Figure 1 (tube, rainbow, N blue to C red):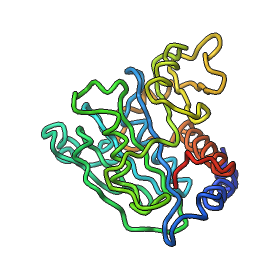
Figure 2: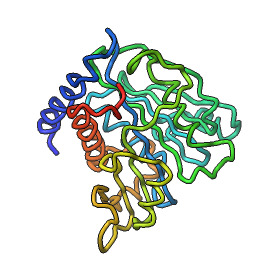
Figure 3: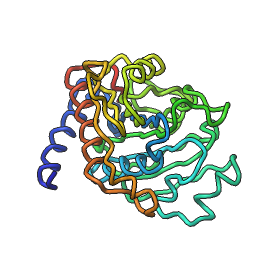
Length: 273
């Protein structure tokens, strides 16, 4: 995907973000804001690597991005954003710690083991008309710590979201349901699709993308659910201390923005602004 082609595509997507019926109702000075969940199902994919890769791709597309990674285990996003060991190891050594940082003028990140410890925080605005994507990455099922729940994951985006985003005022701890979900799984099956659908109660299956290490040989089990393969060469990128810039992540970011933009264009109410 060439840089010129990407820029042309994003110009149209950005226009849809900012010109739909919902966007015209945004309060003065507010920016279009949506949420994306990266749910790692199984152990084939490195949660921190895919989180850093998607966040980096969104930033390169000119979107403001806030990345929240939730859960234990190393490495975490701090590793890929080149934090010093004392910083990226802090939540592992002390579960009450929350690590935050900025990658560039458009990207910031939060890493925590316990989502309830993420405090309300709203970054200073960069551009009022710049779309903002809140990316939350976690393992599913959420069995790493009993205190982690899906409602806790959803509430994190509410604390980070601008309080005036959407129609009317929202409490900082209000749950923010995702506008899209990317599921990274070992092997896609119809049973896996049903489990995810039942667990997340997703009313718009076109916004769910499965990324599988092993793709199905037959049908996907869901006509509207798309499945793509996880590039095997990314397995060698786990140890590099920088966000991966593989075209795979740009493709995910573009597909997600297109799905959300088209939903806005149709006037759907699911994509909160």
